[in-house]
Length: 517
Figure (cartoon, rainbow, N blue to C red):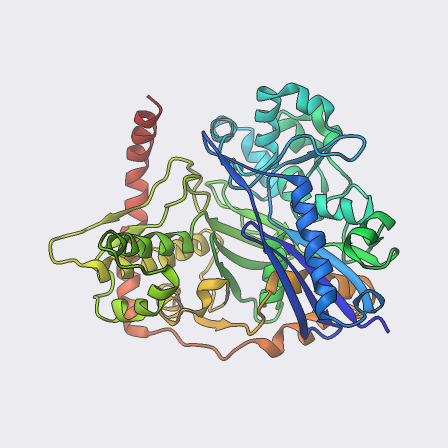
């Protein structure tokens, strides 16, 4: 009996394979740390062959946990980290290492394109702001740096596309990444106009066909079957980009409630559901993403702040470093239980914190590779607990910043990601948005979202609505109401937060120039 769906989620930090039954109950989970390297000048690269080998290993390990797995698998679905550029040649061999979404080397190309008036029609087609993490600018820079590499390449993939190719032998990408990078979100097809506006008409040959995994699948190849221990011919579904799959698994897909969805992990993703292309709200600043969802006429609009829990890691690391200098060892995990105490003993909004701690700068709701983190308003009365609270409030204000450019603030937000377990963050985010907060008991939302696409693809459900009703809705927790008094304080403080980053942009650019000298 084929009663198991496997969702693969090849993230930036971890590569996971998760087994579910046909109604969404998680059966087993395996994972390996993902490995990539940072390059001087803002680069971030990952070995393609190792990524596939690690993914295959997680599938092998899954068989150790699920009896008779190979015979029971109804379908395999794959999602993974978004953006980036993973090149292969005509023989299917990697052409160098993959460039990740963390790679900031194409920032100058992005600034040049964004400053031109023709970037507006590109934005209106894709519904997505241009950023250094995307494949278009990265291809331009690769061609400038290593033209022989581009000449050898025959296909440009994203991470999940590469894994799908190794699983099936098919060269494809999905409508979410295909359209927000090079396409027209309304038609769900590539746009030759967009490709030309990006200066890539001569490289149009590198773009693989778009495949909607909710409507079609391929078969596991004999070679991949040998690597994974699964059966050749098993249906394989190309999922949508990891953000879309995570939103799907976490509860964004609810056309009746129309909630927001925030993923607070290494990065912060803040999303609204758009029903129909006319419901997509484009901003004047040309930022954010519009992603096709695996259902007709449904889109996710997303704004992303580049660094979320990275800020928490940084502020906890300060304390850990001071303690270590005195011979006292404390890990971040050991310090996390102290967060609620620090926040409870500090006054709300006594400081502002700009959470731009990533070396890649910021991408939502503004794009600036030079953006950097900082505190505003420190005085001698402030202590470490005030800094911790300000970091959490900065993340919440960054979330509000993102939602504000996509339309009215949502009345309910469904929260996922590692930081969703923090009661302090839930309270601060809910008050900052004036919204109810709901979390899901779903442990692996990204893999679940990919598996949901497979469930619809193989006909287990007639529609994504029917699938979400069984896989998602029963796992949503009770709504946590926003603290009215705290919400009032944050309503008064938020304008200062927005004014601060607007005023600091020239300072960041001056500092970036000094660093280059």
